[in-house]
Length: 515
Image (cartoon, rainbow, N blue to C red; front, side, top):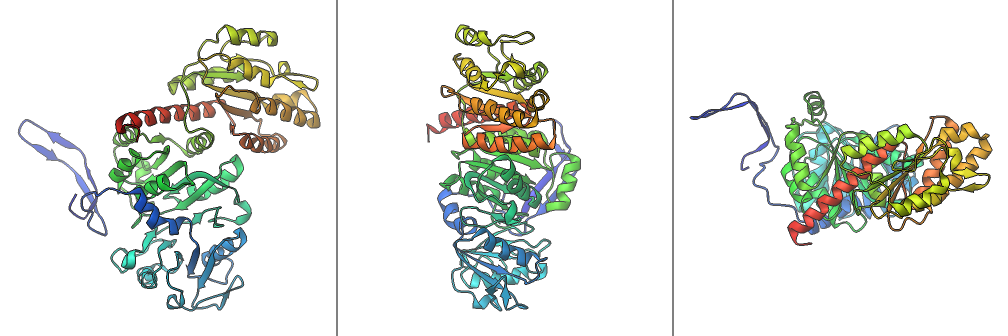
């Protein structure tokens, strides 16, 4: 803890009665002495990192008038997104960038710019950071990869903090910043934050979020985390009034102890997708961010102890965030499955069991309310399996009544309602099917749920027309506060994750006396 060791891997270790032998060991050095952990204070993290996340002024060092270069795209992106603050392009070769007057050097910047984006060649990054710190710049985001170590190069002068290097960029819709094309970036601000060491996953978060109804407080690509750590960013999320849910994609174990220590104390749910959990994945991570592998069991145990939801892949990561965007807790483990397709319900029940969710036998009140919908081939137990053609007649749809019948049972804490969109389009012509899907969905999402959590599954046959209808219906459900998924098993996993996080939050409250 007092040496300049960032990561230590000892494997195997042979223990006998008389001695302990480390057969093989590998260590990686930190660019600065690690020292003992001193903890992370959320209020300090907010004060230091707010200019990086929600800046009021931005300098772009390495700005370019070439539309193909990152230094141009950063400036253009802020202009097209309607950035609310001042932009200062810094370029040695161009006098104007995207219609803005460019500064010839960092020494021409006004004092105290809140955020600088650095897209210069790698070898000059330490010098650039030192000069920015000398102008009182509060924070910097180094997008350049393969930079020399820059800590203690003068970048910390005046307390300037640095994100990166090796990043894609930053997205904060409330202030008008994006890391991808503005045309693919939602302008709607939400309360989900994503921090990613992978630029690709950060870009995915913004693009996919716009498609599946996720609204973010911010998404940031942090690369190698040479200065600002994931633990500090988690503490920032906890202190940020705009953030209620935090998702992290991380590689390697540098600062893992601090990250999980902070996670044990935060009040918001945390979802973690960890790259490099296997031998093959760790080799890829080593070439990506220089990270060593860790024992996967240790990671699972650390996340479990800290109350962090550890997910296996990107789909599960985004599904969990969609779920948490609408519900941060769930009252119990009773799940009702309601929809068209017996096999779908069976697989959903299997997934529920894997996530410690119960499918309670519906009581007398629910059974009585469901009885009028009985039809040949249906099942009114849990899962409730009704053919699509039993869910409507003419212009009248019964999906709302079905949901309201199920929630009469106090053992039901969450309802997963699913519609097979392909069957609807088989039964009716395209215009009639589209209108019918609208009514079926509207009935579900506006049913009186008696305070229960509701998730909606729209199962497509992957036909273009169906996908377009689902996209519009997803937006309708999102507006009504209902999480929408494309398969029952993914929806149930997301519900299971929410239930696990609810239990973790309750245990945290017991441990801290409700603080």
